[in-house]
Amino acid sequence: MRAFWRLLAANRDYRLLLSAGLVSLVGDYVLGVGLTFLVYQITGSTLASGGMLLASFLPSILLGSFAGVLVDRWDRRTTMIVANLLQVLGVVPLLAVHGTSTIWIVYLVGAYQGCVEQFFMPAEQALIPHLVPKADLVGANGVNAQIRNLARLVGSALGGILAAFAGITGLAIFDGVSFLVAAVLLTGIRYRATAAEPVPETEASLGSLSRLTAEWKAGLATCLGSRPLLVILVFMSITQLGEGIMGTLFAPFVLDVLDGTGSQYGLIVGIQGVGGIIGGLVVTAAGHRWSAYALFGWGAVAFGIVDLMLFLYPLVLSGIVPALICMLVVGIPGACAIAGMMTTFQTMTSDDFRGRVFGAMTAVGGAAVLAGIGIASWLGEAVGIVPIIAIQGVGYVAGGFMVILALRGTVAGRFHIDSGDQPTEVLETPGELTAGTPALD
Image 1 (cartoon, helix red, strand yellow):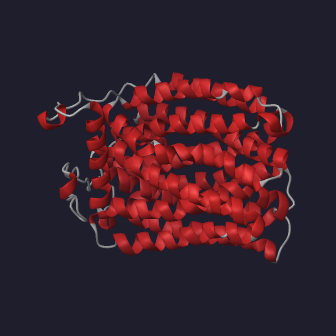
Image 2 (image 1 turned 180 degrees about the vertical axis):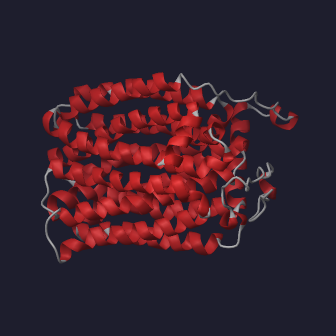
């Protein structure tokens, strides 16, 4: 706890970023959990639930990579403020949803929010390394994971309650207010990006679209030319397939397999945040003792094992208590895996490439989620919920072992962030990025 409070006390801008993230994420979970439950309750169809998730994730495939290129050009703080204000406007159409005949509005809102999010997330992840010392980066990512899990805990519980008592209108109003408050908090951040370097003469001669394409290709080459970043892309493709399945089938899993209610669904989803908070505290206090890749890989393996226990226990046990225990425990390795993955990404990417690299990661993950949604939507009813949703746990176990084996012995594998280890910036020429290129001071 001492390390947690020291990190927050010493970094004002980081506190504001976390506060804004907490508020907006609570709103996101309220809306996401509430809408997922209400859409399935209204339609009774896993295909309809999958359609909502499809609308939310499709923008990450179509826009994510190019959005990252633009984020690298813009001031990250301003980008995040504008994104939050646009999200306020985006939830207004939900006030017109009153039944199955207007359920299509939910899909449009999900697609709109997904588009705006493609600009917000790369800006946030690219900004964090500027708001804390390098020695505190693992801890900062651990705290960021805590905030997300706290938001999951609070927002999921509120989402279930608001879905039951206030309907879609209450969900929309809550989410809109959360975005507005987050935008106000972000205006207090003092950090500003340094002036952009002049565009090389060869690039200046290109048209705007050609330059955008060239920058996008450079970001993709960066990902493919660096072993740590390529490992992250492969990991994302494996695990996000499972996340698409999980997002589509978890509400039916709770309602039909566990015979749960809407409130119990919110509680089960939200309690993972408690474990995540505990895991975040562990990473903040002791994360510097482990390499980022160890947190990343072993955290993913443990996450997958616990998820398999969650999905398979209904074959031999009944009730929601085992589900609550599993969701509580799984948050701990989940926080470790997220902190390790984001630290690997941030330290192995130069600042002027972080937006587009994160955008590429988002696009790959979004494509995998889309595939998972398709699998779950069509096979969830034909094959059964339990055997299909269990794919998510298998994916995390496989992905975690892949990380451990692939990054062992590389600079990313050996890297510990403490007061004595600071990585140099990775080479800016994408073609020169190979495994182990970044050197330690």
